[in-house]
Image 1 (tube, rainbow, N blue to C red):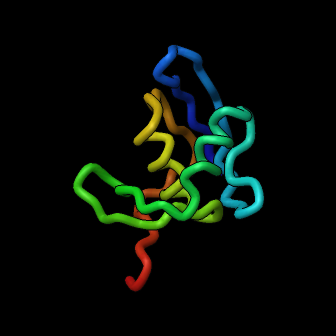
Image 2 (cartoon, rainbow, N blue to C red; image 1 turned 90 degrees about the vertical axis):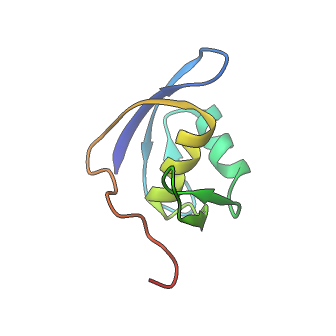
Image 3 (tube, rainbow, N blue to C red; image 1 turned 180 degrees about the vertical axis):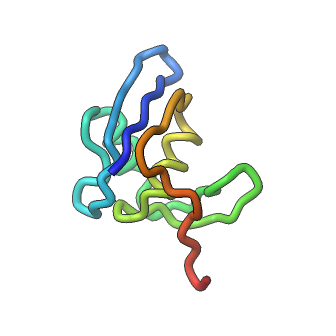
Length: 89
């Protein structure tokens, strides 16, 4: 589990913990949790140059990628995933 702090486009800030649990991937902000839930199953770039992966609640890297794509992530602390999980590798 690691912590992410960021802000939404309207300036509202959030601090969440990414849990790695499929049933509740993000805790600490209802709005951030709803954002992740909205994008479950969609493909998102895990880094600026790819690869693409489907967003899954139990995949820390894809959950973090959603937050980076749709919000301004200010800080990620704790054991942040360094190598994204890519299906088939």
